[in-house]
Structure formats: C-alpha cells, structure tokens
Image 1 (cartoon, rainbow, N blue to C red):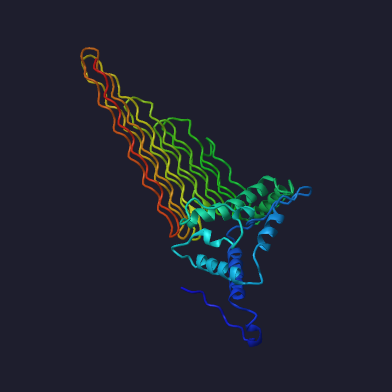
Image 2: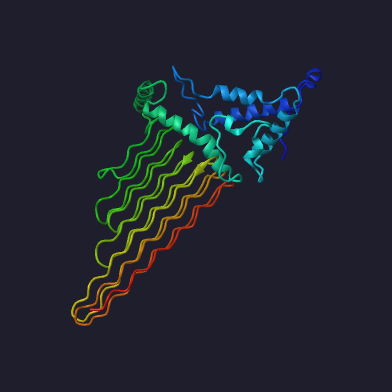
Length: 375
C-alpha cells in the first residue's frame, strides 16, 4: 500500500515541494504520532554533561554533510527506502536506511541488528534500549540533573497517591520478599516491575514478577524445593520478565517443580516475551529395605512456556528446559532390585511472535534418571 500525500493548493509552490519534501512532512507526522502515543516518554534524550559534551554532534554533522543536497537524488532515494520500511514491508532490511556515502558507524548510537529481517530486534537495539537506559538513569538520579530527578519523581508519586491514584507514576517496582512474594508494578509512565521472591521454603512457589507499562517486567522467583517457579511479569511496552526456575526436589522419590512461564508483551506496538523457567530435578527414589525394590526416582519438572511477543513487533520468549529425572533408589540389602529412574521433565512451549518478530526457541526435555543399584 502506498502512502498518500495531499497536494498543495499553492500551485506556484508545488515545483519547490517535490516528492522528497512531501515524504519529509509525512515522516514528521509519523514521528509526531509516535511521540503522541507516548511509546517512550524520554526517547533518545541525550545525557548532557557540563564539561564533556560526548554526545557525538561532530560525527552527526559529518554524517549529514556527507550527503550532497544539490543533487537531491541521494536524499530522495533514501526517503523512498525509509518510506517502504515505515509501511512495514515483509522484505524490510535496516541496511536500506543507510545514507549514500555515509558510514553507519559515524551515526552515534546506531547498531545493526543481528537479523536484518527481524524488525523487533532492530527496534529493541536501536530505539528501545537507548531510551530504556535513559529512563533508568533518570530513575536512579544518574543523568546530568543528578538527584533532582529522584526528588521530582518522589513529588509526583506522592501527589498521585494523594489524589487516590494507585501505584506510582515513575519508578521501579519493589522486589518481592518472604512476606510479600510478588514483585511490585513499575511506574505508569515508565519503570520496571520488581522481581519475584526466590523461595527458600520447600513446597513454596517463587513470587510472581511485577508488571511493567513502559519498561521491563520483573523476573519470576525460583521455587523452593519441589515447588514451581514464579511467573514472569508482563509488559505493555518493553521486555517481559523471565519465569523462575522450578525447585529441585529433596524428599526421596518426589518430583521437581515446574518452571514458571515467561511474561508476555501485552501491547500492540512493541514487546518481547520473557523466557520460560527451567524445571527442577526429581529426587532419588527411596532405598529399599530387606529384599524390597528401591523406589522410583521423581519426575523432572516441566519447563515453563515462553511468553508471547506483542502483536506488531515482538519476539516470543524461549521455552524452558525440562528437569532431570531422579535416579532410582537402591534395592534392599537382601537382594532387592534397584528402582527405576524417574522420567525427565517435558520442555515448555516456545512463545509466539508478533507480525514482525521471531518465535521463541524450543526447550529441551530433561534426561531420565538412572536405575538404582541392586542391594
């Protein structure tokens, strides 16, 4: 589908506003819509330094002046390629965006994607990650504004809760604890979800990772002995948290805990699914008495499913691996046969991708346990 451009009513000025100019206007409108939707409130904002301006203005100017504006052909060709990319061509290749005669390395902050056909990875590397780092620096008071940003965030958050708002506007959610296992939600404007609590108690599951709205979801906590890992936190725009690992079984003959599922990218535009957690190992079977057969080893826990990517740009999360089956118990001392090894845990399912993205990698099933020795 071609992008339509409205013709100017000023016929005299039409010859001076050729295809390149109209495409620049269209690109500006697209950028305006992008910022209006608030996909990242501080997208690409440079960190200024009073005594060391290392943003790369010199390199940027060199790159811009490398294009000959008198010909117009190079710029128009570049805009044609950019126009096709913005329309979401299935053959999208970020290398098409290179300015003629300009080395990409001269552009500050540009990094080629590992897979030229994966728009989601390209967007994460070149758009999301730099904005995310800036947001985290803001939250932690590490920008050129120093601790002022922390004070500002606290003021905003207090005003928000003071008028009855839930959660926080800017900031990272708290990590889970034994008393409150689940991680807290990230800020409504930006911030990460907190990580779930890693259980230290047998049979108690790990905490669930906190959700994020513009940021990364929290990771699920690891399960206690034989217990499930916590679910990864989902995100509306960002990278979802990984599921926690299932706990290894410790009681003879019991099964390992299942891995937690990765969080999902729940938004439409961009979001990466979280990886599923690995299943826990099954425990060794009980030792036989007398001439009795040793007990069967516990079954390995199943791996957690990878989280789904966002509808448009998003990779699915990788599936978790199944846990190893427990070894069979030793047979009784009076000639008892050894017990059978436990089955390995099943691998989790890989996460589904968006229109532009890759399906998550498949997990591996766990190895079965070995038979127990005879008595």
